[in-house]
Amino acid sequence: MPFPDFDPVLLEIGPFALRWYALAYVAGIVLAWLYAVRLIKTPALWRGEAPPATQQQVDDLILWLTLGIILGGRIGYVLFYRPDLFWTNPLEVLQIWNGGMSFHGGFLGVAVAVAVFARVNGIDLLRLGDLVAPCAPFGLFFGRVANFINGELWGRPTDVPWGVSFCNETIRRLQNGVCPAGEAPRHPSQLYEAALEGVVLFLILRWATHGAKLLPRHGMLTGLFLLFYGLFRIGVEFLREPDQHLPDVLRQYATLGMLLSIPMVLVGAWLVARARRRSEPAARADGAVPA
Image (cartoon, rainbow, N blue to C red):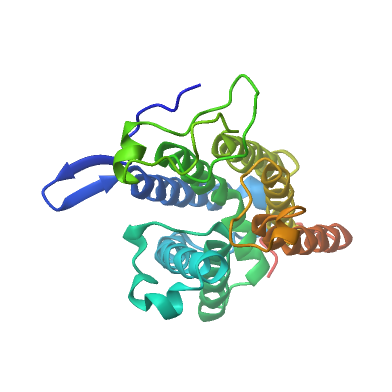
């Protein structure tokens, strides 16, 4: 299957260029913000508890999270995938317009932002994490679709009918006449991740918030997010092209994405088990929210 002739730039006016990747970030952040507001405005989901944050606090938190995503994603990419930039071209480390963002770095940036915001505002950290977690799949979905449009992060060579040859005129033009992925069909692993990390993970967390109403079990939503994201990422990594800079011995058995996802699975499983052991806060008989 030939790769569509997508252009990474959606709109270009003079020196200004609107890229699909930037639009994906904006769409993911805006939808996550709207969904978080919707969650805190649905009292039945909290089963007698007050939501961990007010709408004003959610509005403020979005700025913190945006900075965490961008700075963490870029610094994480350099640390995990291009550490040579620190001594070969340090000015490029923060040049996000040159490409290169890491989910795991962005996740750590978001975790720091949530922790600091919770501390500054006197909010329970796990409860705030439980509000943020079900909103994350929006950004994951759009980000992976943007990866596909950019023709990057492709999978291993394959002979499945839906294999994609990530080579077109735009890629040749941007890569000095060369297609880095070659012309052989490859797994469209970006779309696999969009489906699993975006759609399926959202449905799991939606069931947890609206079906099982697990928000009162502090840490449960955070744990479910970490657990299932890690499992989905590890699974898809078997079909993604291995990281070229890893030692050959390691590349035969694992990818960096797998190694970085294993701690997420372990911490997520621990949080889920911890939340299951804890009893839910009981609503007071007079209907008031427990202190």
